[in-house]
Length: 221
Image (cartoon, helix red, strand yellow):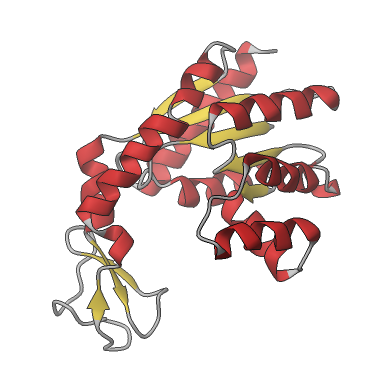
């Protein structure tokens, strides 16, 4: 299957993308991973992306699209893929359509992870990271440390990242509503969108997503 995963920050896209890609036996293609891989391998696209990032500018759509095209043409993506973080706006969605049409393939579904805005703020603003090891992550409500401000694993100090502050989260949501959310209507016009709730246990959300994809597949048979 060829799937695009969309949803606001804090919807759990990264977690669900990894789980769904594994269940569907397709590669998980994330924009962040594409950038990191191209920059670390010092590809021409990676050098170009890094020049924009070092200058504090957004990487232009055409660079992102070229990276995605290169990744989707790898042998492991022949049978399908799951795109996470791309397309990020309507112009990227249009470019992706043109790219797929040139290869005579189409998307199977667009999974829209829906979560209330206040829940997004609560999820992200409540996150606390260990200064000693950023893989040690806690949450003031959902998975609090035994001792406030102290990592259960190594005793390091827990802190809130600047980009996890409520003010920053609300700004990120504004950007999502303005730039990314319009792609949902774009894909709805093609009959591709399946909206599922991103509330509840991680396993339940994965099952909802798989059921939605199963229904989409059955309808298109």
